[in-house]
Every structure is written in C-alpha cells, then in structure tokens.
Amino acid sequence: MKKYGYTLFVSLVLLMGTLLASCSDFLSKVPDSRTEVTLDNVNKLLLSAYPTTAFCQIGELSSDNTDAYPSNFSSFNRLQEDTYKWADTGQNNEDSPSTIWESCYMAVASCNMALATIEEAGNPAYLDAVRGEALVCRAYAHFLLSNVFCKAYSSTANADLGMHYMKTVETVVSPHYERGTLEDLYKNIESDLLEGMPLLSDNVYAVPKYHFTKRAAYAFAARFYLYYVKADKSNYDKVIEYAGKILGDNPALVVRDWRALGALGENGNVQPNAYVDVGNDANILLVSASSYWGYVHGPTDLGERYSHGPMVISETCSSVGPWGNGYYMKPWSNASSLPTKYILRKVGEYTEVVDAIAGTINGHILNAAFTTDEILLCRAEAYIMKGSAFYPQALADLNIWQTAFTSTNTALTVASINDFYGNLAYYKPLEPTVKKELHPDFAIEDGTQENLIHCLLHARRLTTLHEGLRWQDIKRYGIVIYRRSLSNSGAISVTDELKVDDPRRAIQLPSDVISAGAQPNPRNK
Image 1: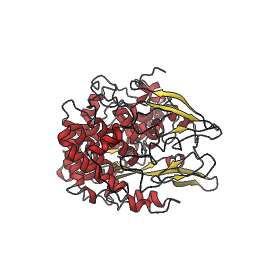
Image 2 (image 1 turned 90 degrees about the vertical axis):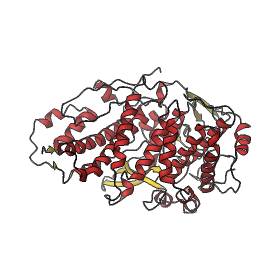
Image 3 (image 1 turned 135 degrees about the vertical axis):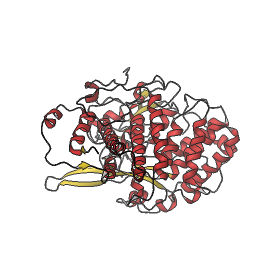
Image 4 (image 1 turned 180 degrees about the horizontal axis):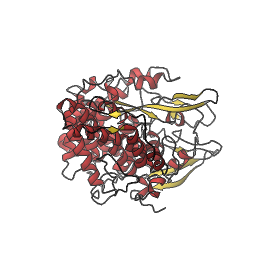
C-alpha cells in the first residue's frame, strides 16, 4: 500500500491554499521526521477536516444587522471597516476572506488525503465511517466557500461563477484551476453529501457534537437543499425530509429552551457557554474557530464604529412582530450616552495566551453551526414555498418557534400574520420596519405567501442574530440593504446601497489568489 508523507502533504496544501513562493524551498529539503498516513491512523486526518474559521463576522458585518456610528468611535481593525463597506479587502487576519479560503481548502485537502488513502486500499468496509465523514466534510467546506465567494443559487447558476471542487490530492506546485459554474459546484456538493451520509456512524466519536454525525449531516442537507432552489420545488421536499429526521414527531422537545437561557446572567460568558453547551440537544454541530468576533461584536469597547446598535434593534432583538416583543433573550447594551452595541449574549470571547509577558493572545469562538431552531425554520420555509396546502404545517413549525423564543400565549394564524405584515409599510432606511421588499429569483405569490415569508424571515433574523446567516437570506431573497451612518448630533445619513444585482453580494476572492491567476468576482464600483 502506498504511504503518503503528511509533512509534505501539508506543505502542498499550503501551496494550493495560499500559493506562497517559499514552498519551493521547502520541497527541496528531505523531511527526516514525518508522520505516515496509514489505514490505522487515517481517521486522525479528519481532525483537520473541519474549517477552523467561521463566517459569522463576514456575514453580520455585510448584512443589514450592522450600522455605522460616529467617527470618534474606532473600528477593531481595517478588516472590520472593509467588510462593513462591502469593499474588497487585502487583509489576511482571522475572519478575513483570505483565512476562510485557506481554512476551507486545508480542510478539503485533509479530506482528499483520507479518501486517497482509503481508496488505495480498496475502500475496506471497516473504514466506511471515515470515508463518509471525509465526503461530507469535503462537501461542507465547499458549501461554505460558495456561501462566501459566490452568488446565491438561482436560475442563472449554469453561468454564475462557482468554485473549483477539489477532489484529488494536489501534487504540483502552483496549480491553476478554473472556477467552473455555481451549478457544477452544487452538483458536486450534492454528490459527496449523498454518498457520504449513509456511511456515517455515530459510534466512532468521543465528542459527537464536534463531528458530522448522521444528525449533523441531515441538518447540513436541510440547509443545503433550502439554498439549492429547483424550478419544480423538489428541493423543498428534501428540506422537509431531512429536517424531519432531526426534529422527530414532537419538535418542541428538541428546540432550545430560550426561556432558561434568557434567565441566566448576562455577565461574562455565562449565557454564551450555555448556548454552545455540548449537552444541549438543540446544538447539532459545534465548530471551534479562530476568530475575534467575540470581541468585535461583543460586550467590549472594541469595534464600536460598525456595530449592531440602537438604529437596527427595532428590526431585530427589540422588534415587534405578530407575537409582540416579549423575547426571552434580553439584549445587553454598553452603558454610555450613545450606546453602540445591543447584543444577545450568544457568542463568547475565548482567549488563548500566546505570550503572557507581551500580552499576546489569539481569539476563539465556539460556533453553533447547526441548531434545531434554525432547522425548524428551514422546514417552515420549505412548507411555505410549497404553497397553500402546506401552510398548516408551516404554521405549526412557526408556533413551536414562537412558543420557545417568545412569551406570547397567542398562536400565530394565517389571519394574524396577514394582518400584521399586510398592514406594515415596507422598509425605508430612514423609516425602518421589519418588512423589506423581496426580489428573489423564484416566484412568491402576493398576499398570504409573501406575508408568511416575511414572518419566517423575521423569525430567522432573530434566531440567527450574530451568527452570519442573515447575509445568506439577503442574498437568497434579493433584499436591498443600505449603509446608514449616525452622527454625534443624532442625524442619520445613507452612505451606500446594495442593490439586487450588485456583484458585491459575492465577496471578492483573496488578492493573492487572484494574483496567482484565479478569476476574480466581477465588480462595477
């Protein structure tokens, strides 16, 4: 059986991910001490098959969950400012497009090395679970790349830029790849996901919540098919199917106890620790990520220039819905004459001390990548999109969410949703409401279906606040968003607009990747 030098493999991955010129120097040296990848230890490769970054910061700062506050407040770094302004950035620190790119392709490379080792041995059945995890992880890393660097999937996916789907171990210096189409990318993701899911085993992990168990793979499939819109709406059947495998016959038993979470103290990491508790059944997949998002958005005086503050909370954690505004999670606010942050304590800030004397630290977060709450709303959306015959099922899911997330005792009905959203004015940047005009590539009927989608998107925005998923909903539904700036006098000005066809909805590729020959995302400003 062929053995692969893991040290050499890592170097080649770095070549592929960042295309650094110094790699040729490394390749000229013989690695005297290397870890050989064999069938006995191939499963260890999958410890690095999960991206070690999160798109929380990119998603939140790009979305309508962030405004600009007076210039006497400072940004955390240049990356925060670039992301908020939808500007192409050359930054390569944590939370940057460059780091996400590298982290995802490093994860893919680990998957490919594991798959190559197993295939070389003839795909023995006793390694089916390892092969299954590698396939699902490879699909997931490419899905994350598509969420960041590509447009939302639509009827033009056969022409829209995708991402190269890495299926083999790279063995050449500075390879060149064509990006292909978004349609090709999604087909490859689907292929790996469907092949890998049946092979997974929940009995091989010491801490299952940090791996793709069957439950986590079903959650991934539910979100993937929600985004993978088909003209015949068949994707929604798959959302319902996979979500049902997670939620069971009584979803109310597996969603988060928001009332208990909200009753915990807001200081320190008490609520964030509880939110990502490995023992909480609502958490399906947890990912440890190198990130300063816990500081940038969190209860600190850092990053106040661009934040989730008093201008936007009327649309989020203090908004009124058909359920009122009795939310179990109360927002924390920094105490000042001009608060710049109103946040729910979901994302903690965790530090790794690099040099105690110099005071150097690395930032980390624990990201709840998939939760039962979000999957419940994925299914509700699928029911709504399937049409009026499925509205009762959608309402059942929305009422489970409402009961868990709010203190209201009045059930949602088609009539109450129509009454609330039907009589609400559409959002204007200086006259904000929770109802924004929708311009999706797919059809939505005026009246009840549109109002149900407004309700669904409102619930999703509340549930996923600070986690980055709002950005995907903006892209999927063609929601126009604005950049608003608040002065010290209280005056609000609109400084930019992201229209439906604005190419900045696809984050620009890292500059070094473009320099190496990758096709950049188009820009018109």
